[in-house]
Length: 324
Image (cartoon, rainbow, N blue to C red; front, side):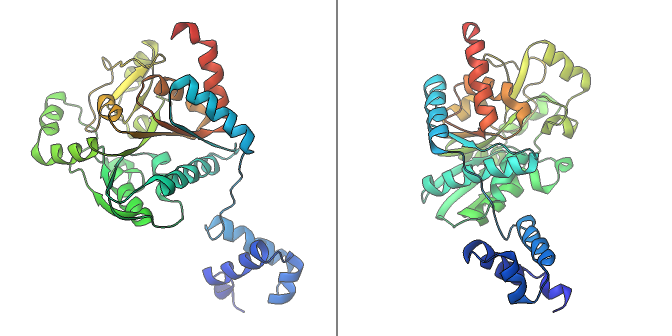
């Protein structure tokens, strides 16, 4: 058997099924397919890396149920989706995304509108695998596009992948995400084409939102939308995060747009607050403070994060409770 056929997806699937579904040992698989045990181990690893096999670690139900109840009571949210902790950022992002995908599979309905933001955490949801659940439904760009972001993290690309993943159709927002000139941005916001798409997003039943934290690796910082001095000045003034990039807020969840705000074409906090299921996704451990502040805005109905972040948010909120 040549290397190409051995590495083919069909062959990887056959090996993976024997191991994960047939309970065959690696030695038994090696004998059956006339391979070495070391080769079988490499193929199983390749199957995981290429997405032929998805390994999901589930936190014990009693742990997540307790955390979910505490977060519901503390922040008035409907649902908390809490993933097991992973050391690798990509694995953590995938684990959180898998929970969001499962939530959407259970809750999406024909005719639903889903407003979609940009960034790695939202994009990871579109990269999951699972059943198509919609015949009708629209994934609407809730923010414009950015050339420097590249396709994978732009709302338009994500919308198209979400529509392919869950069913329905994508709706593009024909506008840039970032406009440094506020006069031009204001004019674009009322442009008939732009307004039509944003109105569809405002009327959505669900929203997929990334949480920004102004860290060096945050989406908007990597895009170069703000100068370093602006970021530092905003941090010193108490700004800790953003939702959708349009509105920024402090640790108490209060809007703070005086330094960085109103440069993005997209939905505002007031728009998101009217969407029945606004899903905030934050996989990174660096985002605990920004996630706490986002929960305090009153915008978020569903939060998707890691076990460590859930514990950190609750501990931070309790420690800072007197300042709320």
